[in-house]
Length: 353
Image 1 (cartoon, rainbow, N blue to C red):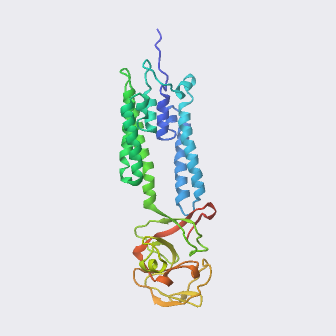
Image 2 (cartoon, one colour):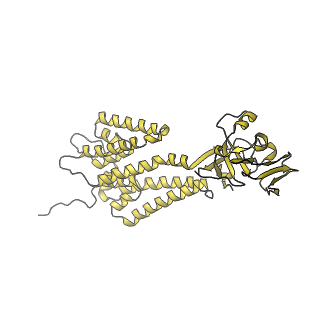
Image 3 (cartoon, helix red, strand yellow):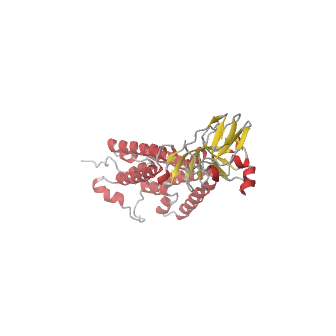
């Protein structure tokens, strides 16, 4: 008497769940070690490349955007590929018909739907009440995190609960819980916490600014978008392009609102003597070489000693810039950081300094 055996990989939707957590995991589950490893390595490489391309001074933002598109394609392909290749079962794996009372529900398809949106798996199980509640809670909590990032764990937990609970509700009395459900749930928690933390990480790492005027021409043009690096112990250096909150004197001179950001170049540091005379800037009685300016300054200033914790900043477009020669010294505590990169538009992408 021959006993029927189960196929080696009986759960195509389990493979899809694994790939939804991280590209390549579904292929590794299926035993495709080379393909799965290649997908996982490619994913890690693309993530590293896009971070470098977008946020490093020498990276090209457009290439980073292409890396994001490639990552999304790889992610989708990994999920579809995880569902394929099951021989005669491939078609049934890719098409899940609406169950009838006489049919059992697929727990792993339920988990997959719950990973997409909490509550979808329960709606598939025809549990409209709890499905609708989870769907509403997941969407509302996710939207709230846009304004309150500290609430991020709440939608992530709702997603994980919906996945785990939906999977177990779909099990029949004869089915046992598969141990890989914990890999899926924990992996989903880690993935969503990581992805959801990206905006907060970006805001803590860099400030994004738009150049509003021609005061820094030719170095910066109107509508150039800048990355400004946040550094706790940043000390401006001679020649740094810095972004700062407009001092009170600058607000009064230029009718600028409080909190408005300005961008200029550091010309003199605390304790240095500065003079502008006959179109030349002198720092500690030494001429300052400035290949970046639009034209020599047509005004006189100084000589004057820069006070402690104060800086002297000028626009590169010297004769069309409201800067320290108009409103005075810049206090150190108003400086947000150094602008290190033009990240947009594409034709202007370049490092600063």
